[in-house]
Image (cartoon, rainbow, N blue to C red):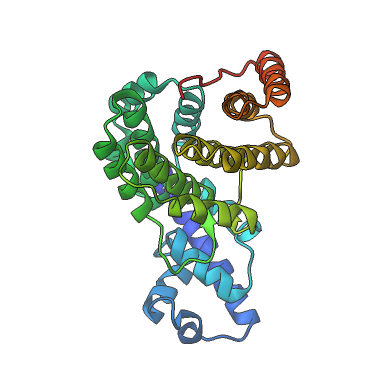
Length: 289
């Protein structure tokens, strides 16, 4: 525990020094930097290494300093979690549709008792909400977990979203529409807007899920043409980002879409694609639509 604390203190100190250095380069006082963001005393505590800002505050500070959030200033900050193994495991279980194992692992690990960073707690409740819904179809509980997760870091004042925030917006809207709680696709539009306008901080392959969930929601609303458009965009986005994640799911769903509009040729092409891709990359396709 002591080594973990020392590591955290070292990163907080380094981050604070870097922010102070960048502020002084711009000849800003602490009061000027804090204006419209937080209190001057908060900036002072951050620069002294007494406080590590959450994702929202850190993003706002960096934007005012003209610093990219993915530059070397932040490279160690986003690695301070002692539970990277946990994060990777829950992501893997979720992506492989092993939801019962996911919930069992999260319940048995008791890691929730040791989390303190907003981002770590957000990760926990995002995956817990997704797993809960997939196992029980209890939309009320799942949405409670997901909305809780979003509140840890999100503010409607943010211009840019983290990748996880985008996934949470998508998951919330997906569950809402599938459980007939709403016909609105507003949260999907927020997520897609962030992706299309490059307003996602450090995007990763998991954003492919947004295209898939949006297309599924449109399919259930029988908006087949729009759903096909979103799936095609998902295929393009995924391949442009040198990924094969979700590709077999995209083509499987496209097969169903083309069948629905009686486009036999494209249905056959999509079926061939999903079978080949799932075999080559050993992807487990979700066929429960």
